[in-house]
Amino acid sequence: MSSSQIQRPKNFRALGGDRVPAGGFLLIPSRLGGEELDALEEWFAGRPLEYLVEEGALEDPEIANRMAREGVASSPFDPSEDDAARSGLRERIRGVTDEGGVLVFVPAPAVAQPATSCRVRPASLRALLAASTRVLPLFVDQPGEILLSVESPAGAAVRGGFAFGTLLEGDRLTLATFQEVMLAAAEDAFSQCPRLECHL
Image 1 (spheres, one colour):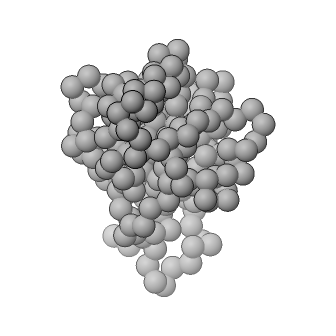
Image 2 (cartoon, rainbow, N blue to C red; image 1 turned 90 degrees about the vertical axis):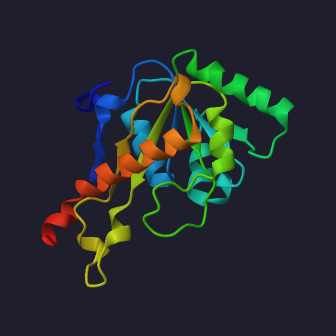
């Protein structure tokens, strides 16, 4: 899918849209809120879309409300599951992606420093990467985190956006490679931040 085929919600921007493949894959975002879920639904309109919801994610009312909507397909994910349950997780993930669907991982909220490139816990990432299906890292950009103290969030031209990383498959399905690709996507997003023109 090219970047020109992706619908862009107002005040959201997307980088690396040409990296989004045809066919099925697991999308792992650096973080995810209700607003970003809405944007993903718009961008992937017309494609089979399901959600893998990490334990604790539904504590966010915005996430819970969206997962409860009619027609939303989701399944739970517990990173503390034993090996037998992990086998079932792999089957659930592959059951979506092998049929050409887009499976979106919905991470639980995590405490992190502002502008952290990825807030998904390493244990969760290892379990997801072990499913051996194609993985697309997605950096979720929130420009408000880099506002100067004298700036007003209300004046931001861009509310948020996505930066797609390069697709991981085969031998590249490792935690180190995932983190490397996510960091590169974060750097892409930062370099294209419109507010930089006001300060440099």
